Amino acid sequence: LFPAIFNLASNAEISSNATCGDPEPEVYCKLVEHVPGRRIKNPHCPKCDANSVLSKERHPITNAIDGTNQWWQSPSIKNGRQLHWITITLDLKQVRTTQEFKTSTLMQNYTVTS
Image (cartoon, rainbow, N blue to C red; front, top):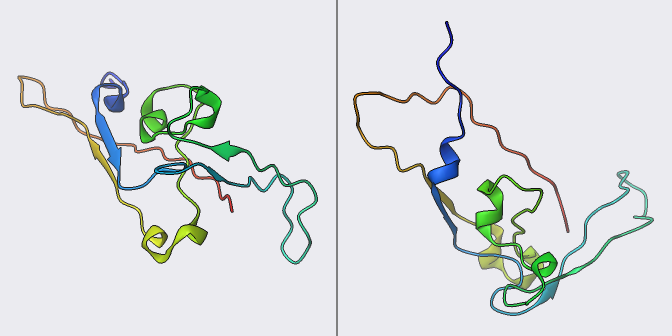
């Protein structure tokens, strides 16, 4: 008998101390085809702007848990040493009830960009 499985992050609050395009627009590159020691053939370098009216240019931390294919984009570390370490805080908002929740699996996906 298995307990019910559900996404605890659906009611969570998430925050980060830095996001791509905040406070100013910037360009980030996805490594489309990357082999160590070889030149990147087709870099894909879109603009990131936290204040854009275009949703494809905004990548807020809330995208990380909204259940869509959108994503959070960290700022480039080329923007300063302070961006070499970023803090992400996820508050699952668990409260004690007659049911106790136990987290057995935490799934995270990462992609390296430059």
